[in-house]
Amino acid sequence: MPSFADITPLLEQQAIELPSWAFGNSGTRFRVFPQAGVPRDPFEKIADAAKVHELTGLAPTVALHIPWDEVDDFAALRRHAEDLGVALGTINSNTFQDEAYKLGSLASRDDAVRRKAVDHHLRCIEIMGETGSKDLKIWLADGTNYPGQDDLRSRQDRLTESLQEIYAAIGEGQRLVLEYKFFEPAFYSTDVPDWGTSYAQVAALGDRAMVCLDTGHHAPGTNIEFIVMQLLRLKKLGSFDFNSRFYADDDLIVGAADPFQLFRILVEVVRGGGYGEGSDVAFMLDQCHNIEKKIPGQIRSVLNVQEMTARALLLDREALDVAQRAGDVLGANGILMDAFYRDVRPDLAAWRASRGLPADPMRAYAESGYQERIEADRVGGAQAGWGA
Image (tube, rainbow, N blue to C red):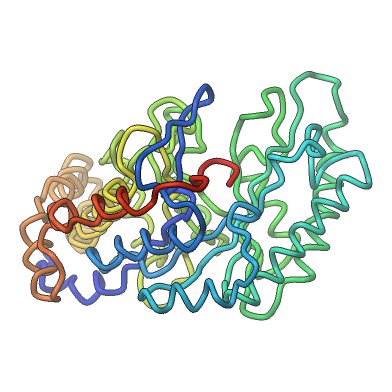
């Protein structure tokens, strides 16, 4: 059975990207709730993300959302991030908040609308060159609300053509990562509703096109770890968007709804070679909600991922393999459950302290005075939020 000391070299390799939009105001479909101290521009978002990394050592990169994070000088934003000890990461496109995209973007019947959507992605690729970003992540709201509204097959064909043009513009060392979501805002049909559709589209593009798995984008009861296993087996799992959901796409703190599910997912990630050196699978949060303070919410999430990663790494795989080969159903399940129930929090706290990090990052943030400072300093101007 592995000891905690055995897994610390692997834990040192963990990196979880933070989403810039998680630090802005967010809410429900009915209202966005403002908070004191929320960033007013991408530079302040980066500063808040850097504070999470300073206290946890887990979040060295920050994803941007375009046009929410448009700035006049991306080189300056990149230098700002580097000065704070982090780097700019994934560039996320946005084709779901423009009036032109009411009936679709990359899959629209309107040639001019598709051109607008493709050009937006080409601009995102230009920004990747300025920020040093590796991944262009695409999530589409494209779909239909009613049977007969549009031809389902033609929409797939148009989507393929649009993605082909975007993929052709991706540079060496860069990737196109296609997300999926089984409903919302399109309710009858969604053009990329599941991992199979995303896989079919990216497999036709080439080796540098991958699938993004958002843990909240599945129907209740879905065996997400099975999907993780399959995408790793097919070498098409590009990245995660980690969050929790109780009913739909709730974007809650990772592991809040079902810690055991998060553990099972990470067991398959480790088993399938999706973690550590040699893996190109990117871990990212996609969490932004309306109740908790933004920075401690992100701290809590990255710590939850770290904790479940440690438990997955401590799984006694040799004993598990023996039990599985012997057909020992309950014995194999017991070995898995032993790893899940192991309380690694004291070990992680001591390990963080040995690396010069706070043993308890949540407490360290509460005692740092940072929240009070940003609430006092960030007065006036327009707060960042959904759409900005």
